[in-house]
Image (cartoon, rainbow, N blue to C red; front, side, top):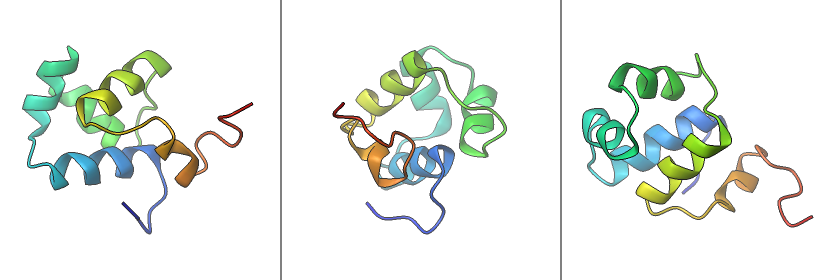
Length: 77
């Protein structure tokens, strides 16, 4: 998955839409409000590491994808 907008919010939104999952479905699965997920996707809020891992796991994404957007610069260290 490549994105021109390299933010965690856009990454989550793109992966969610690629998988055909609604904000409501994803937010219910990770036990957060739909409005909070919307705020994450629009970069109003940055999710905690716990929420981020839950979201990525639910989307079937490896946490290593965060290197792609330079969210984590040295994930292996």
